[in-house]
Image 1 (tube, one colour):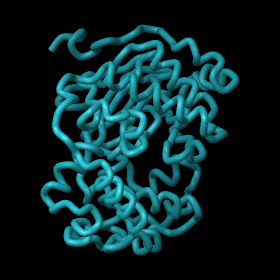
Image 2: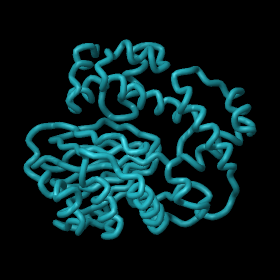
Image 3: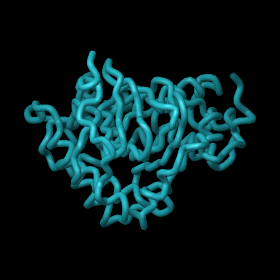
Length: 308
């Protein structure tokens, strides 16, 4: 495999035009040498999560999440294994990871790595897609170059101290939907899905994530048989109902950990069998143990309770 086949559409040294003024130039100012491993988490914005991370070496073990991961590399070389290939992203590149795709992550050089990432739940994107796709747009190349797309992401991730304004959020979602469709593989048209049924199901799973949910219950909620529901749920949201439920539990768990709850208490309060069960799922979803996540994000209290 030669270097060009791995690097794909890289833009050496390029930066989106919006980086310098997004959030008062915060992205540009953040591009100093990465010296301390850390994660900065922005306030929740209507279901959209935004982070800035800086690392040296291998940061994340192989994991997968049920959201789109849309990122901008700010400094260094961002490397990750995705769909059977090692990928490299340099400053100015956009990273697009499809929901439920296994990947890892780390710095490709000794210089270290700094990047910002947005995690976008597919259900939030459904209205903005406006029926143009049978399922989720799949972008085959996870590293792309698109100035309009990059500037939109830079504006949304420029200020991690504040929430995304509601009007800005709608504009952002419309732009992301257009960009994903633009770069997606063919085959987006065809087949019908019952979007209302999938929305009812996802809403129920989100509201009752700490419960043990059966297929019979979801059949009653959706009005679909369990197999049709499983197929259509994955088509619309990129993951299975079970994995969607697990991810909602983990989201709740992170909120509890942020509030100072211990790992054992968090595990029981979010529907996991025990702390070990919780830790296994957390690492599979985020590539870090919950204690490590707590330490990197400035919430070290849970780390003392973690058992390896």
